[in-house]
Image (cartoon, rainbow, N blue to C red; front, side, top):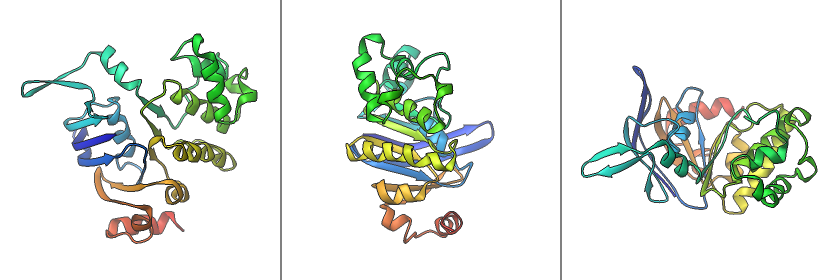
Length: 244
């Protein structure tokens, strides 16, 4: 479903991703862990071309993202074409990014139109918010707002969903309700790439865990290997701190 080849990205003189190769099979869950500033969020944003790669290629379902090839050269696609590609890639951010003047249902329908109201209600029910369709964001808890954001990401029936630390802005007691929704999506076969510090979630749900450090993919494999028997000293040092 996702193929990253040699992805490199810099901001000025700071290289935040270095030659990253990663393959995500359809229907799988890949969890990316690593210290703050390691490039995790930037990697997600490169997948849907919110950030342009400096070198390398990103393909989703075999399609080159953000560019078209003409001979030996790549030309960036028009914004209209890029938006069309992004419609296949749901994105759930750290902050909920809901429109405060819209109800939960209106926020979900914002990208698909009022004609999709039955679908919007179905999605809100799927994330446990059937009784909150007419509630405004200010009337919802943080966990409920994030679940609305997940329903919105699913509204266009994307091929995959990217999660950028979806529980980091939540009070601890609200984290579980969002992770429960993500578990349900994983069990339903949704292709997911999740940046998170929730190691327990990674251990339980992930097919592949990726450890990123200083923009480099240090280690990847099943949770039982990366989390329980890491091969690299840097991975061991990181986990020794977050698993305390």
